[in-house]
Image (cartoon, rainbow, N blue to C red; front, top):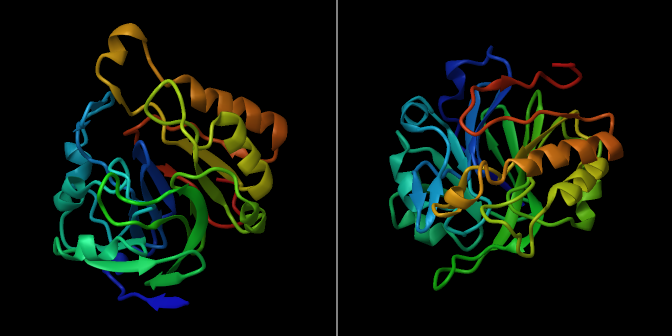
Amino acid sequence: MSVSGTPLSYAASMNRGPSIRFLGHSTVLIDVDGVRILTDPVLVDRIGPLHRHTGDLREAIADLGIDAVLVSHGHHDHLHLPSLGRLAGRPKIVAPTGLGTMLSRRGHDVVEIGPGDTLRIGPVLIEAITAVHHGGRRPLGPSATAVGFCVRGSTSVYFAGDTDLFPEMDDLAGTVDVALLPVWGWGPRLGGGHLDPARAAEAVARIRPRIAIPIHWGTFYPFGLARLWRRPLAEPPLRFAEEVARRAPGTEVRILAPGSPAIDIGRRGSTA
């Protein structure tokens, strides 16, 4: 199944190089061929008992100017309705099948997508990828199947969302320049359907990207935890880098602090 999308503001700058900006948790700004894409936006300081323990995002929010939002699944720390409401303009929301009605009722321009479906926005092709994770809106919201996404243009970027390892991950080998992989969560333990540093490194060994960037770490955790545990959740990306060096030495790991400036990721075949 292929879904056609209307080109948005990508023509504003086709000449800028591809870049990635990690804003924290699973929120990443992907800029490829002039198309600006935001993943799983959570742009607030608090989600229930979870508090953001990184820098203020107000300036980043004002400057996003995005064309599309990719939503991997319905959990509140990935599909955060107040954060979607803070985005300027009316970007296209690309969400798993089952979540569209909830989003469209709030005035969003929504396209539903499932594994294997594709959507073109200007020069960029977005493909939905299998994910192994509970994807519905707990506790009483709509059910949905979690997905990851590949953004394909002059550079290809795989955003895994939340997932465990899955057999089809092998099919991505040789097709991905940059892999954005979750390496932890928001507490001292991980539930099912997540990658820890070792399993995320195994994903790198299967996919063989040029660059791997750990996400889903070090951003949100319960407020009281900070009083008992200095710099909580800072270790997982370091363990991930060590595991990748051992299992997939041909991939460069770049650890980006949540909220840090964008980095150049180069075009296909480059060494940037």
